[in-house]
Amino acid sequence: MLDWVESLNKALDYIEENLLENITCAAVADHVFISNAHLQRTFFSLTGLTLGEYIRNRRLTLAGQDLLKENGGSAKVIDIALKYGYETPESFSKAFSRFHNVAPSQARRAGVSLKSYNRLTVKIIMEGGSIMDYRIEKKEAFPVIVMARVIGEDSSSAIPAFWDEYMSQGMHSKVPGAMGVCGEMTAKGKEFKYGIGCPEEWVRELPDGFERWVIPANTWAVFKCVGAMPDAIQSMWKKIYSEWLPQAKYELVQSPYEFEYYTEGDSQSPDYVSEIWIPVKEK
Image 1 (cartoon, one colour):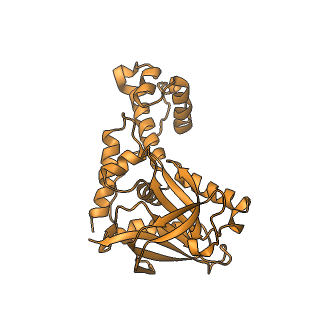
Image 2 (tube, one colour; image 1 turned 30 degrees about the vertical axis):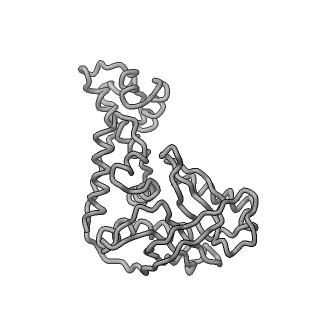
Image 3 (spheres, one colour; image 1 turned 60 degrees about the horizontal axis):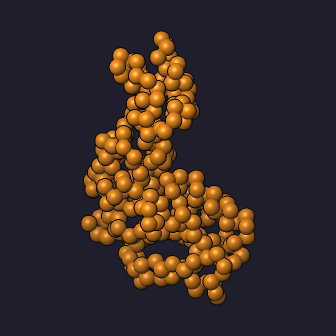
């Protein structure tokens, strides 16, 4: 039951120990043997922050403390900027001012209040139970046709923007947007491919600008979501990571693929049905 929680806390420990290094989501994911896409989605579902935003908040918190205390409060702003990964005083000042609502040059003034974002710790808290409608399904490998895009550490905003573009440009008339698929990591290891499309059997030929992916054979945990999009599916992702995974007899497998499936109908209806498919194995 604690494996999932321990993995997340191990990720947070790794971040804290390497705040002065060039941390990437991919490096954190590799450290705890979770796929980059899984880690990003998990973290955002549980905290409402991207992993990059969390790292930035922790660094800016420590930078504020350094301005007040390091070398008796006499450390140069440029030295602190470089220490926390900012290449120029200007970029540091902009980020610092946005976070603390005060410029670095003003942070040492008497009475100035700075913000603090404390280190996160993941714990299991038993609250009122909620019903989660899911099934375990074994499925052979199957091909999908998708329009793909490389997604970085801004996945929480980049994926919805991709969907808006896909629909506004009429791509759904060529290939129905029945699936959103998280795919392989790129060669750089910092990004992953995300595809919008449908099973191959739904289309007659491969349209220009689309790719054929093969989803590997797996055992899948399939969660039914009922309600208007995107709230229903976002709420279910949070329940999967905060309620189901910590207590289930299943755990995630190291497959780069997971996907959401969308049925026909009014996606804003309170009765709209969608599904989340994640690859799992018995513990």
